Amino acid sequence: RRVLFRSGNAVADTAGRRGEATAAIIALRHEPGMSIRRLADVLGIAQPTCVTMTERLREAGLVDRRPGPDARTAALFLTAGGSRSAAMLLRARHRIAERALSALDPETRTTVHAALVLMLESMTTDRVTGDHLCRRCDEVACPDELCPVERALRPER
Image (cartoon, rainbow, N blue to C red; front, top):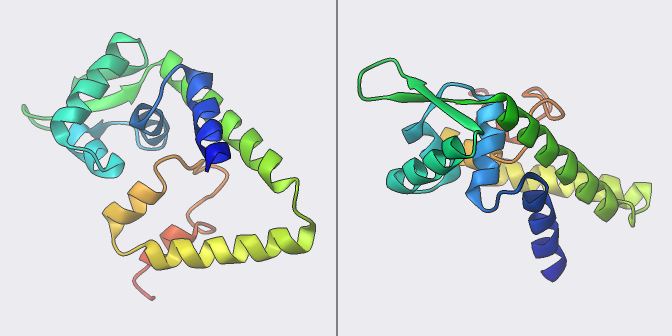
């Protein structure tokens, strides 16, 4: 447990952010223009908490708020600095995962991968849950056709 905590801190420290702010940066990388309500749902936090967090990210120069589709909605976008932070977060996450996986032989890696796929599929009950599970994922490295969460959400299942 201590190793996982340190790993999470290492990713957050890379971008100078902690907690759900790191997930927000990654989520906005994959879904630019997301509303605060949608981001709060993805992160699993209260909307007022999300407003405060996005305001801090805006003040840090990582997020830009623009008018949304109606007068009550703001659309959130990463700034250039936010995009760089998202890339740093994903690289740090990848390095940590590779370091953890390097202790496993190829057969064990295959077994662990299969178990994780089954676990993610079984945990995915709806779009909000799926988006929450994937809030820190590198969706370029895990496109929809390979993602166990996206596969679990397909209607043919």
